[in-house]
Amino acid sequence: MADAKLSGTRVSATSNTLTTPRLVSTVVSGAEIAIQCPSWCVIDHAESSNLYLEDVRHESDYADLNAKVIGKADNLQLFARLGQSLVSTQAHRMAPYLVLDGGDDAEELTLDGADEFADNLVAFAAQIRELTRAARGGTR
Image 1 (spheres, helix red, strand yellow):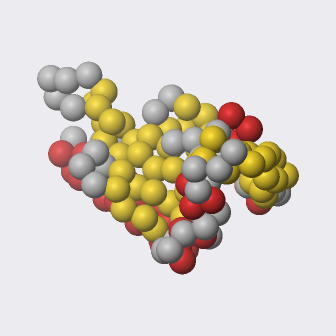
Image 2: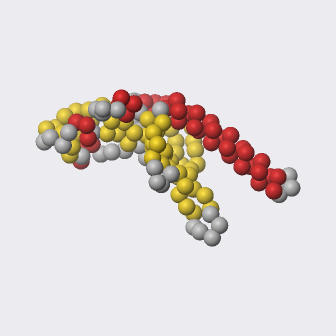
Image 3: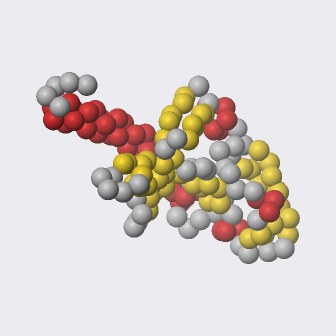
């Protein structure tokens, strides 16, 4: 099992729970339809009323990245979530993708791009540790 600790929220995932879809009901233009819903989706489709099929979407919980900013309380710096549209004029949205939001603008990454970004975050974190270690004279 993969575990991550982000902003005090424990996120656990196994490949089964992230990929096994379930059949759920939703309403589109007043008609109840059944859709495949990925297990990572947290939208209550049964309670959703959509005007168009294009309005049906899947979203995951958020992963948050916070920082203790000098003179301020913890500030949300970046958050990410999965997204997927049932029907879209943008082909990449019909497959799961990652939404990265820094507050002003949101960016969308393919899953491969999200994996690469995560690798870059790990490298970035190592660089930050090196900087703070150097500032402390090589301790910690």
